[in-house]
Image (spheres, rainbow, N blue to C red):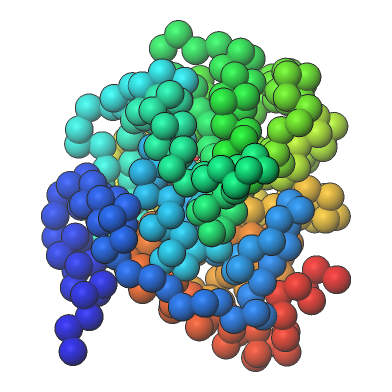
Amino acid sequence: MLDIGKTATWLLRRLNPETAHELAIHSIAHGLAGRGKPDHSALRTEALGLSFPNPIGLAAGFDKNARAVRGLARLGFGFVETGTVTPRPQPGNPRPRLFRLVDDHAIINRMGFNSCGIDRFCQNLTPLFRPDGNGTVKAAGVPLGINLGINKTGADPLVDYPALVGRTKSYADYITINLSSPNTPGLRDLQATDMLARLLDAIQTAHPDRPPLLVKLAPDLEDDAYGPILQTALDGGADGLILTNTTLARPARLTDPHREEAGGLSGAPLAERARHVLQLVSDLNNGRLCLVSSGGIETGKDILERLKMGADLVQVYTAFIYEGPAVLTRLKQELLHEMSRSGIRTLASLRR
Ligand SMILES: Cc1cc2nc3c(=O)[nH]c(=O)nc-3n(C[C@H](O)[C@H](O)[C@H](O)COP(=O)(O)O)c2cc1C
C-alpha cells in the first residue's frame, strides 16, 4: 500500500530545501501530515514542572513563525519549540541559505533569523488558545516552547529579550532565549557570563511571573566556558539549558560538496560535540537545571544515551527533515526497545 507520509517525504527531499520547507509547514498546519498514535505511558516525562507525553521535542527553527504548532503536536512530538522570533519582522539572509548534505546526514543553514516579527507571531498563536471562562486553555496538546532572538540591526538585547518575554509569557509553557545562532552577528557574545547575568537579571526583574526560562548555548565554546555559564544561569534564576545549537566547525569526515558553505552545521556530524558538551555540563549540574540535549540525534539508542547522561529532554531537527513524521514512530519504538534491553521500565524511573 502507498504510504502517503513516506511518499510526501520522498518528494519533499527532491525539491529545493526552502520550497520543501514551506510545503511541509503548510501541509502540517492544515493537518495533512497525519497523526501519531498515543504514546506508551513508559515514555511519560516530567521536567520544568511540566508533563511531557514523551521526551522527544521539535527543536527551534522549523516552525519559526508559529504557523503549524497544533499539527506538529499531532504528529507525536512530546513538545514543540517554535521560533526563533525577533522583535521586528526581518527577511533573514539572501538565498540560497539552506543546504542538505545528504550523505553526511547533515544540514548547513545560514537563515539569519527570518522572522515574521513578534506581533504577527502572537497573532498566529492566538487561535491555539480558547477562552474557558477561567483565563485561557492551552490547546496545542503538548508543552509549547517559544524561542526568542534579536534583530540583525538596531538590537538592544537588555531591552529586547525582556520585552519579548513579556509578549510571549502568557502563551508559552517555557521560554528559550537563543544566544547561540551563528548567523546573527554578535549574538553568541551574549553567552559571556557578565552579559548573561545582566540579561537574566533584566528578564527576572521585568517578569518575575514568567514561565520556566531556558538558555540555548552553542557547541563552539571552549570546554571550560560551560561551568561558569551553568553557574551564572543558576544564579540568574534560569530553569534550564539547551545543549546545543548548530556548529561552525566542519568535522574532517564531511564529504558533501556543500561542506564549505558558511553557516551552522546540524545533524549527525554534530552528535559527538553535542554529547561531549552535555557530559561536561551534566557532570557539574547535579540535576539542578533542566538539560535539553539537541544535536545529531538519529536513533532511540541516541536518545536513551543522552537521557542516561543527564538530559531531561531531547530535541530533533535534521532527522525530522530527512525522514519526515515517520521518524517519531521509529524513534519511540527504538527507545522503548532500548529501555527494555537496559531494564528501564519507565523514563520517570531514570530520574528517581
Ligand atoms: C534550518 C535550520 C534552522 C534553524 N533555526 C534555528 C532557530 O531559529 N533557532 C534556534 O534556536 N535553533 C535553530 N536551529 C538549530 C536547531 O534547533 C537544533 O538545535 C540543531 O539543528 C541541532 O539539532 P539537529 O542536529 O537534530 O538538527 C536551526 C537548525 C536548522 C537545521
